[in-house]
Image (cartoon, rainbow, N blue to C red; front, top):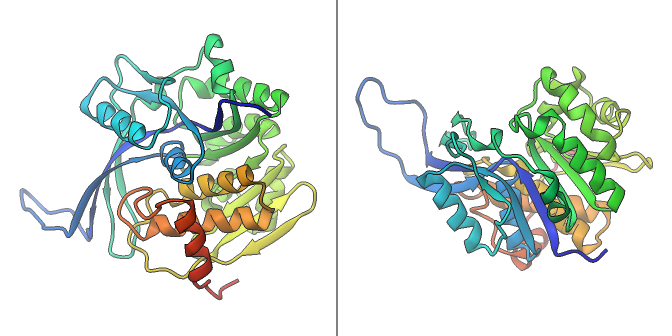
Length: 318
């Protein structure tokens, strides 16, 4: 299809301040020293759209920001990567969705999050054609988009499917209470990409095949479970099913790894790669991300990602 954009990411776009290593919060008014501190655009849509842009896709970001310094910085950073921001909305009465991330020595990243304009943005009827002028539509952050989650996201995904746009979907730290929101979207979702933990929370099940089947039965075209150090599990409604190992790396920070996986997978779809190659590119994007502090920090460009695949050993745990 002819489209203005290769990739559109709609949803959770956040401002992050990260530091490492953090083992505990200083008591009283004390100060602890850290080795690294940085800023990043993150979120299930924010991280994904930047990685896709780094891989050479023509991208647009769709979401909400506040009228504040964090929102100004996010807009500057998106623009730096050549991402179109015409559908980024400044939402009156909301701050920019923002997090303080305290990365642990093992790469885990407990965070303090201030909900913000991701809850406040809304795509009206006059903007839908522009949102869908894309080959791939990624919706990231279901459960955090209060105004969109009430039915508008479903309408946009349904129209995307009608027009032949490839659709991918991710959630935000889902609980069982989020299942109705997600379930409405699955019939219009070509690729649903939750973490194993999120799929368990949504379904109450545990085995990867059972988790995937639960979601396929509710309409998803394909389910890809991200398994952290255990790799990824792919299950398509056409019967294709496989698990792949992760790359062997030294982990610095896992913030945004799932979001970078989404973008790597979309890059593979854009390039017309096989399912196995799409997952490989997704895992390489996620693994590179984990080698730096802050979402996308370890991702450079598509050539570097391909070199990473060729030169980085796989873990032998699958």
